[in-house]
Amino acid sequence: MAATETPSSPYLVLARKYRPLSFEGLIGQEALVQTLRNAFKSGRIHHAFILTGVRGVGKTTTARILARAFNYEDENGRHPTLDFSKEGIHDRPIIEGRHVDVIEMDAASNTGINDIREIIDSVKYGPVSAPYKVYIIDEVHMLSTAAFNGLLKTLEEPPPYVKFIFATTEIRKVPVTILSRCMRFDLRRVPPDIMSTHLVDLLHKEQIDYEPEALAMIVRAGEGSVRDNQSLLDQAISHGDGKVTAATVKAMLGLGDRARTIDLFEALMGGRIADALTIVRELYDAGADPQTIIADLCDFTYLVTRIKVVPAAADDVSLTPDERTRGASLAQKLGMRALSRTWQILFKGHEEVNRAGNGLQAAEMVLIRLAYAADLPTPDELIAKLANQPSPALPSGPVVRNGGSSGSPQALRQVQPEVAPRFESAPPPPQSVPQAQAALQSIATPQPAPQGLATPRTYAELVALAGEKRDLIVKHALESSLRPVSIGDGRLEVALVQNADPGIIQTLSARLKLWTGRQWMITIARDAAHVPTIREQRDERHEAVKAEAHQDPLVQAILETFPGATVKVHVRQEQVPIEAYADAIRDEEEDDE
Image 1: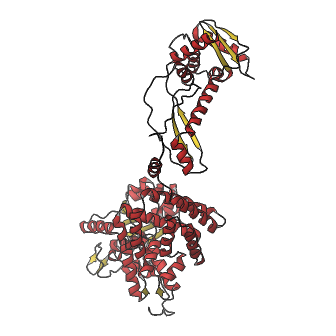
Image 2: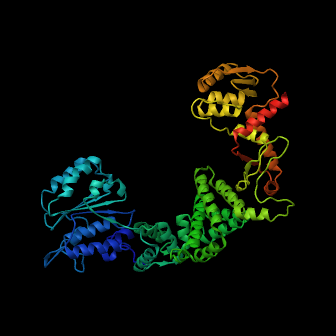
């Protein structure tokens, strides 16, 4: 155990007590240290530096070490160096933050142009005792626009005895004009293996007993921040009464048992919802927050997925033995689709639990949803399963040819149950289509009219002409409000549907005269209620295709596999020559005569 602090030596938290005093103690930033060593060795020392990175990775510590390096002075004189084997004259005051020539400013509380004016005015005067006057501005991104602009000229051409060191966690908020005048260093998150070694070293110095699993939890929670890890370790020592154990760290962080989290994951993947809910209750009763339970499942899902893609990820030192062995085993058993589906359900469920009034209920509903979705077959597995079912006439694809009395053309349709994957077949081979079938098909997909003054010879060409002229009112009337009876050279006989606007006849006559350059005689038939409109024929054809789709063996197999599912039929029309529709109209007129 560490010696008890006396009243004359107040306790210092680990983050302050073990703050590095040189680059030898700065962990995880080898690139920065190497660059600065080379710069000092060659004498190419920049006048302005900007340090960026997440919280607690050593930005302020690096700034103070640099200030110490700039102002190093011993009995041999003043010479900037990173070799602190012997403490210099100015080192102690700089370390303790009381040197008159090293000015630290917090930009979060000194954001205005007036604060920068004080710096601009003070740089005119040389250092009092040290070789350089060093300005350390922390959280520099908090400065106002005017403050940044006021600093530009001094930052670009400072006096030879002035050095600037900026630190920020939001590098994107710093103007590019400032960045271009500084040497930039990006401080990285400390890797878990280096962090674990660092914490073990601190515990040995403090003479504190610990459990490796507890350190792994702290390293994971610290997210690569040295200060966060040191603060969590300080808290764990106090929480465990001088000993760092896995149980105390779990209670301190509100974490669930990692082994039980893996048990929960395995139960969910196996569809054992009763076992899963029991484990959730146990974790909740042990103090785990419902949102933390879902977050732990997300973390483990990510771990299994990463191990599946990168097997070497199982060697991470921050992983517990259960995570390393059982995670690798699950990565071999579970498919990528199942893991992706699990991640999506848990990710959305985490938001639901966060918004819910009762987090436990929301978490259990998320897990029930996941458990029932875990054993759903993938699309290829479902196709293979349905294809292997015995059927007297199971087609190779869901192609429906409507050959009933309605005379509908063959159409390609897609079967899409709400709970089943979407199947799409290749287009059917071309084959002859009766004239009446081609006529009905051409109604839905009319061909464009010729250029110049049009001469529509069929009703389908008349509809196509209205579409080509982009006259939606006339086109809608021709399709839905008028029943085509006959059409000839400059004459058109139609019947109005019930509640149709009679004024459409006058509008249609004017449009035809404008489009064709001749006067059309339009008559209204009285006894033509039996003649269907284009829209009625299209709807009738769609219903026929839909009815035949329900008789498809594959569709019936899907409906039996998924009780309660519904079928949506999408008909993709084929292009049929308009001449076929014209022939069909003539045949109908001959039959009427």
